[in-house]
Length: 548
Image (cartoon, rainbow, N blue to C red; front, side, top):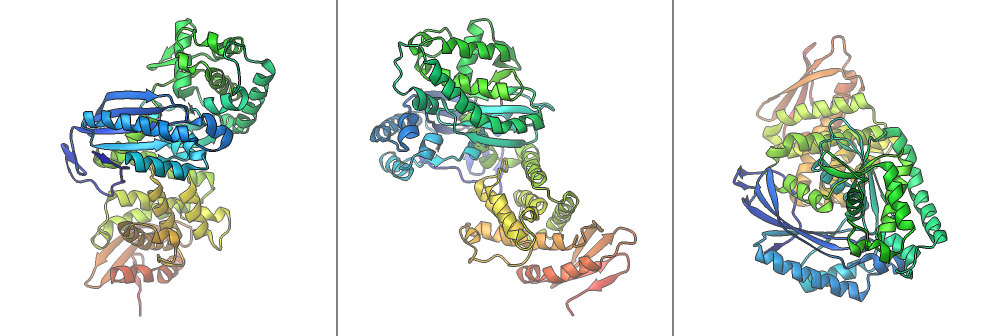
């Protein structure tokens, strides 16, 4: 059994029954180490577009109980995690699972002894754990949402209520528009406000009110986002919302839409009031609720109520899906033949780049023109760079975002562009792909790629070569709109033995002086990389620009 994180592939090879080294059927184990529980799901991938769940399990070990108070994972958490993972390994071996993907969320992320914990787990189980950032969690929530219902043309507020944090996202079918990770979780709030509460007693109103004020303080800044995008309803993920929907159904106050159980806004408030008037011991006996959740359901219900209140009194649908489904979707996108999903994935990824550009007020016309010209050059220069469609998507994203750093200043905007892109939320791109996009954008001007730049030096060699090839293309594309006037309508390349002649088709009457000047300034890197001298020919007057 191979225990590893799936590496993103640059290209896919093979037929339907064997893709990127994977033979169908292919079994994958997904483990989610959350603040409340450690969950396992084993998938069998039957084909590039068909999967089924073979097995699932959950161990509610409450990793977050002490972390959110002491900022450290206790020794007991180390031992419990090893015990659970060893048990899961035996199950995975029984199912002849080929690969395991293991992710951890806020409890592990926030622990000051996280590195010691990860080393300990690796030593005693052989399992490597990837700790997700809040933004990465949000991306998985979005992917899970795409598999939960049809978005159509609607804007939806997605929330994932976990034990340690709540991810809040605004999304459409095309893109994840906004996301924020809030320090609101069922275990976190319970430990913060009711750590010593007697389960036989009702919750003290003054403490509940203090917790309400805290939740409102965390969510209130998002009201302007909710007002701007006007989501139609909430789609909630996580064990607590799902069980609240079950409770609503059992008491005939729930709704069911689009294959999802839900809670009308007015009855969501009623549920919170019911928990508020009860003790954890009484809550445990409520029909439809898992007894183990009795002590955390008040805080989870409050999180849900606060977001529903401040987002415009929205109704709530819930999905039983979550992080593991999002991880599985990413696995399929990155490991299974991307041609199966290419159109949907690339549209989804590029739109996230466009939305980021809008957020930072890029010059849309120039960005689109550079993307257009870079795409043209990519196809025509393929005999020199030998890259595939996956690289083109990275180039297109970089071309659109190359000037995003101008929002800070012009002088070093290429460096600012790299930083913004590498740190931004670009849905569907891995962190390594974001680093590549950022570097391509950085190298659209000034310095060539070199190992003295840490981000470039740290890339795998194949990625370095990709960055260099795409940087050469984006420099030429940017130069061909040096005037920001979109003067070039088309470009065609003809190869000589050691030359490339680029023939430009311009708008009638266009002055290409700046474009020709830009090419002269920016072509040296491409000429050196490809060992070809570049000539420019203006179709309108057959004038050539050469290295004379």
